[in-house]
Image (cartoon, rainbow, N blue to C red; front, side, top):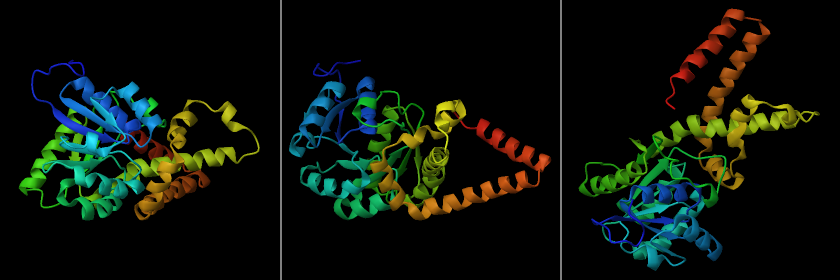
Length: 293
């Protein structure tokens, strides 16, 4: 693997990662390990900048957009989704003509609504389906995206030469990090992740709240099942507040489906329906076993 500041054997692509935390930091580490990208990093404040320089060792790192944006062909917004509009306005004057801006936010309709009026067709939404209950740059790791899905939400029509070029750049970025690429509309994305990402989080939060509302300190005797089912409840409340509010309609729909399943389970238990309970459990067990690791 070539080291930073060596003479590279071939021209490398340049990516600017803005406000890296767990996701942006892991992307930087993965791309550095692959040796095909030059990495620029922007941080909001001096403390974050020092941390990024130490942990990520980027080719360039700065508090100033004009020092990291020019020359980058892909710019990745890693800020909370509520801050992306402000960030897009600030970087716009420094973008190369052929640069594409993407993001890592877990909701897309809101992000597209905020950023497309600012950036036009140079914005391409993205969402790597990988993460951790941990947050911050210290939790970043190079293998976070290996075989993880990454959903892109291109503007239509996707056959337009500009969109094709942007898609190629962003696909290449995430495949370089080890991800598997999927494409959806922003609406399809938000409906899908409400079920497979946002619902698991709120279910874990509800389970922790239920257990902790009991008079006994039940968490002290909890085993692996409880720990596995509630791990994601440790996620950042600031981050998840944005997600839940901005995708609330899709999440409420997912919660309705989930509640129907809980009601079915409750009914089977009340009726002591042995066959029904077995079938309910077995069906879920078989379905979960088909999930790729």
